Length: 458
Ligand code: NAD
Image 1 (cartoon, protein in one colour):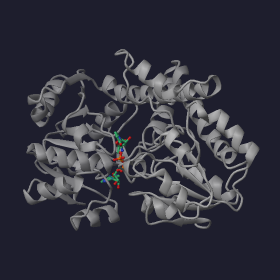
Image 2 (cartoon, protein in one colour):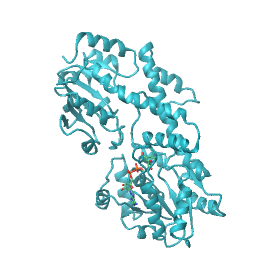
Image 3 (tube, helix red, strand yellow):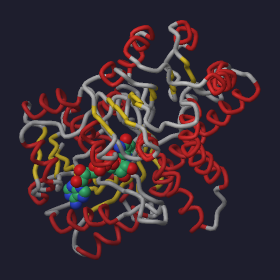
Image 4 (tube, protein in one colour):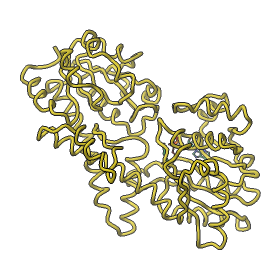
């Protein structure tokens, strides 16, 4: 099969490489000059484990190509995927569909025959139908169908998620005679390798498919906000949020994933998709109080993290050196979109701290988003810890887990460790003489009180 992928970002590039690996001929169209230049040189402009090899193998096999010529890419393609960004529209939380509609219009103008236009971007309910209207207006004579195929991959494990998904959701339009059958037949052939692996493929209406993506992300965000509230409660009443998460996660109705307490969710999807779902519900006159509460809890949590850090540092970070471990919103990605590190590092610097930061993959993407002064990028975590009064763990990269508390203590000038990802063992940190604070674990309240009494940073 020949397919075209419009957009070669986190989703488009991974999807294109995986479809090529399934055996399809995939042409990726990318307009970002930097990304396209990198792809044309055989370089991967994003960090995603395993993607470089998958892309290289499929270029070599002649199944994957990149360019800016949409007409060439869609020529003979049975499916044209739209995988462009849908960032929040300025100010109001709506998804900005400018790129999606531009891509649909460009595809319509370039098509030379029938194809199914598939939206992989996360888009509000009704977008698929609006794309169909737009294409019909631009090219009234053109035969085409539309489909919605939301993507559920997670950055950091994107290839495995795409190759072995929990499910594939495909929404088609049953209101136009023959449309659903034609589109489903093409999509079934495209995903046939997964079908053979017995990955469930769920065929729905366009509207259901569009809503499933927002509902899934909002539910996961709600789970995170829930466990974060439980972490706060644990700190007050003396529980351990890890034990609580395990205890509830073993209930099959709840499940153990997305029950890790932390500094609040961030990233390129949850913040924007929860806001977009709220707007969709508002416009439809429906209630979305649970999602609204999820967003409020998360906003408040992010804001409270700075106070928690100040408090652990004895009330002020002025003239203190703070080593920051991790900048990306989660490990195994270079994605800095809506990362909790952005407001936290700004706040630290504004309050007079000297920040020494290290991230294994995200420092290049971080530079334009973080302060220029008061921040030094380090060569590794131990370099960052050298001479630091406090260490702040913001991203749970595996390489930070393996660091010896004794070594950290030797390198530091002070002894405060604030672990917002709970990657260290409190007993081991304490045994090394470190003043360790984490999230939702019993030592938290008592220790903060004792550091405040004794002063910190020594
Ligand atoms: P991204 O910004 O990394 O990639 C989008 C790419 O599309 C950019 O490189 C941009 O240059 C390109 N582009 C925009 N308009 C174009 C056009 N007309 N022609 C060719 N290229 C064009 O975004 P992303 O993270 O890949 O997300 C894409 C969509 O997938 C969003 O709707 C997002 O919500 C959704 N999604 C993202 C993830 C994730 O983990 N990143 C997961 C699931 C779904």
